[in-house]
Image (cartoon, rainbow, N blue to C red; front, side, top):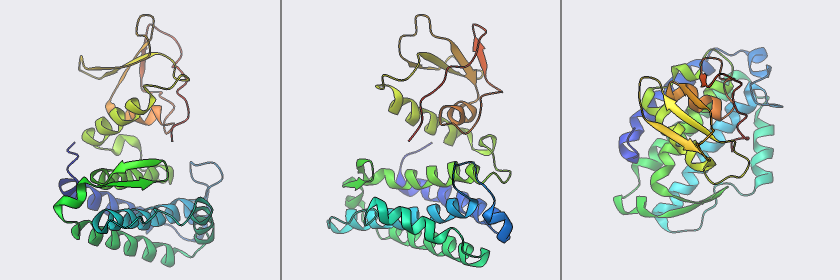
Length: 238
């Protein structure tokens, strides 16, 4: 998958359309139902996705103007906004999602070429502005799964699964709490290695399934382990 932010905008729009179609199926009880994220309802997840879009608009504006605009006013304000919006009625949730998606699209379109080279401050530290469109796509695709409404990692494209898998492995590479393992894509000799591969098990499967398992969205039931044995226990993802 390309990391060019302008080429990724079509992927973001398609993922947003899929998310909106799912969100439109929820009535009040559906929004109040538990998501796959502990302590969060589907309403929490949808509100988070809306406020994430607005936070990314803030960062795109910071990259474009050079002003030090934070993603959120504070961590406490972010959490309060999610909590306050979680119990809204379905029509309000859906309208919010549509409007924030439009704001994100407009902010991307307003970016001059040179602004993509800027570095912005996310909640977790500095990030290239050119990665913000990927960040939005990742949020939509992963949290769509978290809605527990029929959209699964197997619905991710191979390109998205590969990019997410490489990003997650890169983030785990220097952590001391990661068990050694070799990850192999189905039908390929290409491998990603974490830790000392000498006695590490090889975990094989489709890239989206490998990525979903590493980030705790799938138990790994369709993955194979060589030699036979239990799957390693990945640490908690971001």
